[in-house]
Length: 330
Image (cartoon, rainbow, N blue to C red; front, side):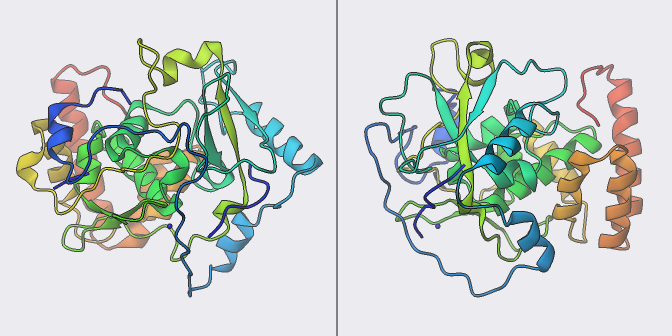
């Protein structure tokens, strides 16, 4: 095993991989940022399904710049939805881009390290800055920049993360990727994660995630944020620019997983009914996350809620018995 329309006019690793990750790549290995390359080959993808009204409303951001954009970026930079609680706001700056900037452009001519992110990452998928180790690990394992991974795939990542936390599990990149194959192989455009039908546990966030290309901006890493995004040698913890050789995954075998990965996978495979990706993603904005998770579980399948409650109780007791004070939880 191994490693998707033109852009709008206005738009808003660890360097060394483990031998285990290298063994999983079907094609070229390693990170290849497109610094020095101004454009990536872009494939036109035409959707035939329409967004549900709520999706269209949530993602209908203005295409051109102006006061509204500046106000929106300011509000995101100065409130908790973008910057994780307890983290200094001096770690990044959110900057509007020029008319010629494209998310697939490299870092050429830049005096500061930066990467692009879409508006929908924050407005709909509730991504926080700085990115956590699990999220950066997934980007690194896939060898893609944040905007190169399709938003529906980001939704899977977000839902998986919060589900693991609610069950006292440490989310890991390869436990997550076990449930997916990657598409496309060539040519390189946006990378999508395709659920493996036989073991898929999360439903799709949206049947047709449109309009996300209409809004993006730069996340510039400030001096105070280098430790969050850069390794000690100055290399980035994940690709900041689009790459031409994303890692490819197909039918990952459980034998390829570490013991920790297998524990996470085995726990999630106990669920029979599909789990609600959109509901789990919305929990990031919740005041009472566990109560909301249980509510979404109850609506998504008859067996999900009692199983979730039972597993959570079991894992909490197990963590306490092991004296794990640092077990991630909500």
